[in-house]
Length: 155
Image (cartoon, rainbow, N blue to C red; front, side, top):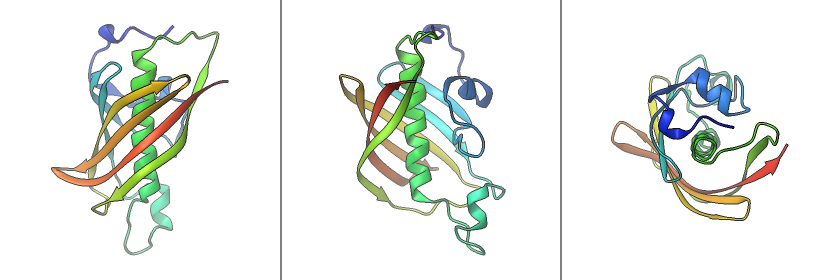
């Protein structure tokens, strides 16, 4: 079983995040969990650095973090929240897949040196799926937002 949320010490670092999510470099897009209200909301940080592999091709000479990776980072934050909110049995491992994205908006480019603050709120659950509202900020500026639907699938 997962550690009970009440026993967690915030912030949660990248090593603990890697123990929760199946993602690995270069696709683990969270550096820290700074706030968690189990089953309701999570706030995570992503430090954007020039040595991210996607900057080699997006766009050379004008590096911009791809919007789809910002949405993926929000989905990963949602996955951490769900994993830490509901006990999951180690004998029955599950993976959360992003199955739908609605109303995605990109309001500001995200560039090396920025720190993304990912705020994700759990909206509702139905069967093995959960709906989330995610927002990504750089400082106080909204960089992106999206509604996401994720499905839990036994592995």
